[in-house]
Image 1 (cartoon, rainbow, N blue to C red):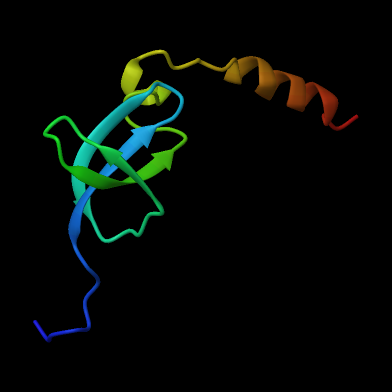
Image 2 (image 1 turned 30 degrees about the vertical axis):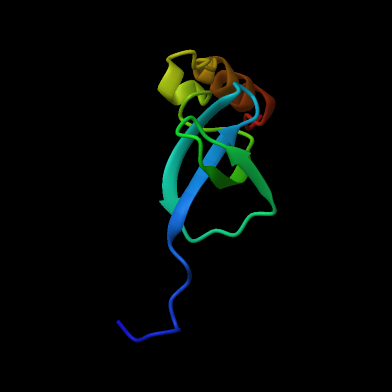
Length: 81
């Protein structure tokens, strides 16, 4: 790799604000906040609104929409007379 053209790849903590879940990973994203992690070190903190810990697809709490009812309602409303 060429020197001085790549962003700094370092450990970063991502915190899910909706479920208070946090995980440590590596990223090039920059952050203003920091957090003291379980290992005693301080890492940059990135706050996210949703993660795999709170997303309905991953938690199994996904809502099923009434698609058939919507289609029938649409056809009834715009049916040719």
